[in-house]
Length: 121
Image (cartoon, rainbow, N blue to C red; front, side, top):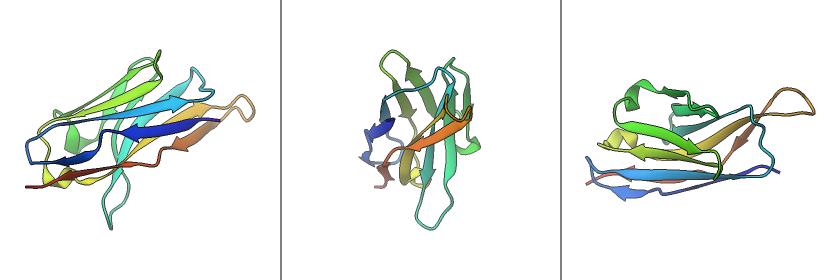
């Protein structure tokens, strides 16, 4: 069974940096997309960035130029380097995996438990 575990969250001052990690385990199809999403209290879940197994990336408008998503397929780990952090970045950050199922021939959606990122002075 697929499991996703996030790490690296914490408290940082505005302008600081954090690096989040998401370690995946279990049977993962070669056809997959991983991504980071975030959710602040009272707000909708928001796309941060996605990355395919081949390395194609997509970023949310609010984080372009500040965040960088990457992955190491050998380690089955995804990263999010966050620089120039702003108070508006404060949220719970969730790791996502969309993996093709051989049973249904459709993508199955997996989520991690989330890691808290707080940007405050």
